[in-house]
Amino acid sequence: MVLKRNILKKIRMLNLSKKVCLITGCNGYLGKSICQLFKKLGATVIGIDIINKKNDNLDNFFKVDLNNKNQIDTLIKKMKKIKKIDVLVNNAAFLANSKTKNIKEKKLFYNHKYENLNLTNTIYLTNCVIPFLRKSKNGSIVNICSIYASLAYDYNLYKNTNMKPSLAYGVSKAGLKHYSKILASIVSPKIRVNSISPGGILRGQPKKFISKYLSKTPISRMAKEKDISNVVAFFASDYSIYITGQDLIVDGGYSIS
Ligand SMILES: NC(=O)c1ccc[n+]([C@@H]2O[C@H](COP(=O)([O-])OP(=O)(O)OC[C@H]3O[C@@H](n4cnc5c(N)ncnc54)[C@H](O)[C@@H]3O)[C@@H](O)[C@H]2O)c1
Image (tube, rainbow, N blue to C red; front, side, top):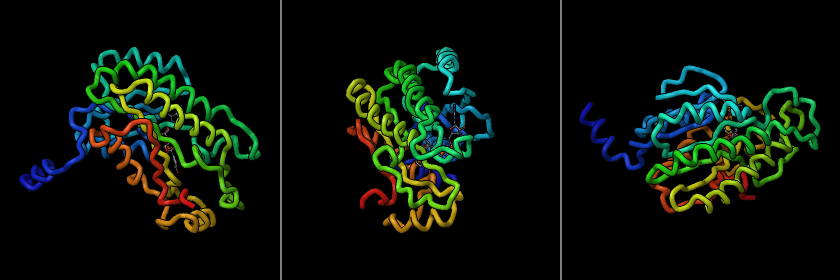
């Protein structure tokens, strides 16, 4: 059994061994999946989140409110002991359908909370982490965006549900997607920057929503966290060493028609 495991380890092509990876929103659904896969692939995993939850795949955890620049500055001071960071995954976000006070928002209502966490402070954190990434041989930044960085919402999907797609969410993710491209041109060749635009992840959405969503999705199912974290691992690894400034849509084909 041990021998078999060792052989499997050797033939596993994609690996993140010796890579120090910083993952924001590490205690969320996708964050946990990324941490688990990165750990399995040999990475040293450092997590950041506003909530402290049990997460066995972390080597180090920092409780930080990324909405607060002072807390980001304090985090960077604490990280001074870390010699280098190889991978930064910007995954934390204020989500489109969070059950917050925005429940009554109208389609045109613009909540700056989305922009602050998903864009402005993600950029602030990234700029602070770049000096650490420069110390890596092959630094990689992976920004988690959304199909709504490129697409408008189909409001018909949301009819008669309590889901409230937010204008500011799509705009913040579009900004992050374009930031990734521009940043790639600035920090090249030392650091690569790519983004991923996931489609909807299955998360107990109303049946009405799911059936309409699937009727528009060629790979007739919603995404699982693993569908996305596998792609994050690819961009984090040296398997994508010649790819920078790109956005990869991972949506089962939702966006092709
Ligand atoms: N769920 C989907 O269908 C979907 C689709 C496309 C893209 N995405 C993107 O995937 C990423 C992960 O989403 P998820 O579905 O796992 O959501 P999630 O809510 O499970 O995870 C988000 C994590 O970010 C953390 N977070 C929120 N505010 C924070 C703050 N101020 N400071 C620090 N951490 C904070 C949360 O505590 C949480 O652990 C997000 O960027 C989201 O926009 C999700």
